[in-house]
Length: 113
Length: 114
Image 1 (cartoon, each protein chain N blue to C red):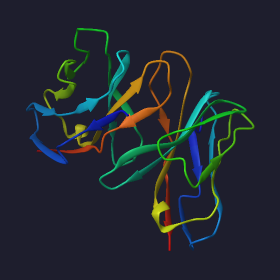
Image 2 (image 1 turned 180 degrees about the horizontal axis):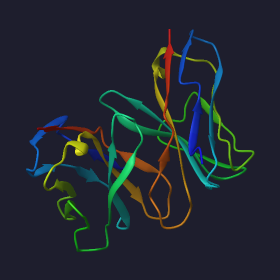
Image 3 (image 1 turned 60 degrees about the vertical axis):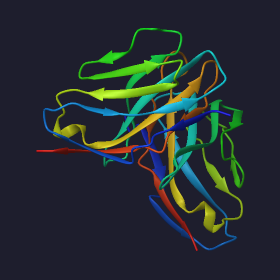
């Protein structure tokens, strides 16, 4: 069981570039989500999904797109990177039902110049 | 809008002593859940304790307990007999019942002194 995996671990982009952060889980979890973590801001929810084909916005969705074509994968797309998107990004998953134990990936540190 | 506030950026405690981490929140909902998560240096998030708002009784998990004051919208975490392994970032979080949106506070870094 690999749990939740994220690639890449580190990424540097120039303003205006696009990229996709990958997230995969092998626990057959229906719920997957993306957070960003900034100093002094805690974790903020970007987008989440409760199953293949179902996504919804979190607190800070602007500038990010997601899709969920399979249960395992939940990629996060930055359409046109901005310096304000410099952050550490975490993907998380959990089963639906009465549980709040979230399994987090190791994070991707993104710098936008 | 829902908010979660942690006013202590950093706390220290001697090994074997007790420490309390503070959290206040704001929500207009009547049915919600509150959580404390632990984030060690590995950056994995671990659920420490969960409190259902409709329950009067404070949740307890081994050395971890909460003081839930619903009217005051306060949710503090008490760690008894602190251990070196308790050193981590602790996040308070809120989720409205029936949704999957978690609102996190800014975190409190806990240092445990040997």
